[in-house]
Image (cartoon, rainbow, N blue to C red; front, side, top):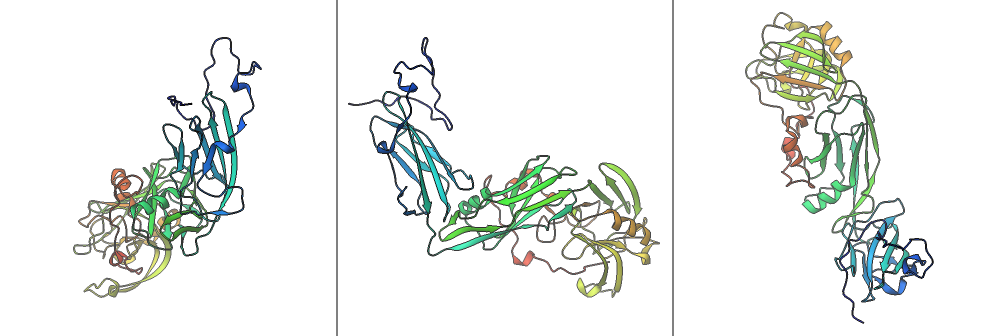
Length: 415
């Protein structure tokens, strides 16, 4: 007989029933809801082999159809052996469910399907199947950075891909599978720097004494035609105190803060005209100690060749905070360097001992340009949160990242 589908909302975990007066959920009066769910095997069909040893094609979405015109699907749950859920969509009339996220290759799946017939009697079916491995494919591996350890609160998490990903839909698959969590929890997002690199940062700096974990769910997932997710080692980082050094180039002074409290004021010299120190927020890349710096590294017209101590690197191109005993007469009074921030040997030693990779060094009131967000170290915090989010494939159109010409040389720049 014909049946007009009733307007219902499919629920993800259970069938919700409104019980009328005088009817109990555990009664034995013949009400269909009191009966054990029947095997719905004859009422539903799959577009992929199930329970017969054959492997399903991971390139095709999973589809489940209600064969009985008087029945409907009420719920579908599909998970792989690691507990990853397959997202899906149920049609309004309950006759068809299809996956909306890609299946992984070489993975075992279990699918639980709930149905009901025209009288509301529930049906249930549980099936298992395996996906095959595409014969021709490329594997997209992921390497998280930086190395495991304790960093300052400005340290971004990075993800380096083994192959370029340009298509926005493919980028969305990748980004959706790369997870970063922190304790305490904070809001954050990925930003595509270029076709192979992503940076992750929170809206504000990381909390102090936080634990940050990054991992990938990309393994076996189809990213694009003939491109499948590969391996990725998880990463755990911790943060220390919130250390920020703010250099006022016009006042020739650096103030160092720990957890919001000023702990030291240091007379400094920064870049002279033509070699102005970059403004903006820079994340400390590392402590390099003793470094040889020469004028040839930046093409300076005035020659220098110096061994510099207590050197803290801020940019790939060679901007440092370091000891500059030759300019102590200018420190606190004038800017005479080739772009670095110089201070006395004693102050540089103190700074070196109290700073770590990931800490913040900010320069204000310089005539120099603002530190670029990418391509010369970590200038990530020079983007507003709104602008940062536009670099996510899940949130907005992805801007082009810097090309190869923006990947500057890793060598000393200035003194």
